[in-house]
Length: 121
Image (cartoon, helix red, strand yellow):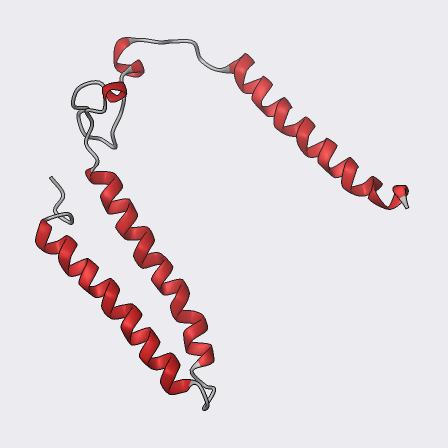
């Protein structure tokens, strides 16, 4: 019984060894050239505003990223919906539920658009 887990333990050990080896090699062969601009915080190509540890930084990029994730997840929900829509017994219920789901997300998108969250400043 114990020998049946041996291949799994070997793979865990091999993966751990390779991960630790890669981290060790990157520590040994990394360039050591710190200077002020390199050590400053970088906010996706925008100039940092204040100190990041004090909470003074631009969050606009993160708002765009969250909106992207929300609408990406919406497309993931559309695929199973399209498959289940072929079932005659549930098709009207499923169609109405998806219309409600898309309407809620559309209202959120319109709200973000009106508030200017999609404007790249």
